[in-house]
Image (cartoon, rainbow, N blue to C red; front, side):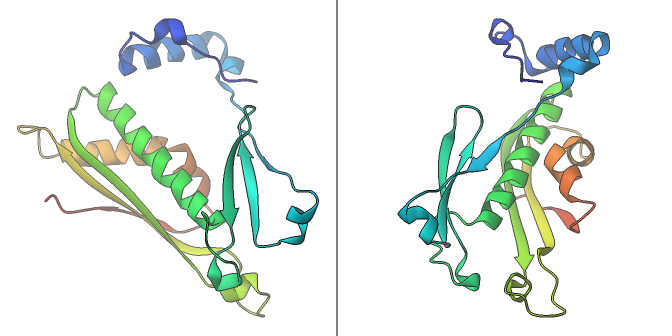
Length: 185
């Protein structure tokens, strides 16, 4: 299925838009499916460089250059694939939390999401006994709500965002991910 564009609904609030979508999806569950797309493609001299490439995103083919991390011999002069994974989690959690806040009518004054991931590069280099992949990840949330907001509201927002974040819920079964709320400044 393709994503359905809803430009005619843009003047609506996030809550109104999501209520409209929920209603549509109750009537036609198949319309809720989305397929995301990313691909790489190299030819000529580009194929000879195993350390760099371009990943294309969506049917529009928006390109993002990447290079391998220096821990596996890459130049790390572009975004590394592991950083793209961290970026996917950070952006997914950020937007999920903001949507949850909008549905709950909670005003956010400040939000920052920082994702870090730990990888032992020896696994990717084929060292026996060392697993390949992220060993752990941390998702740190710096959240400040509007003055006068109930103290438990931030905890409810975070719990709902954790429960509904697609990327977090996709990664969590395979990678231990700890969600950390930063202390308010």
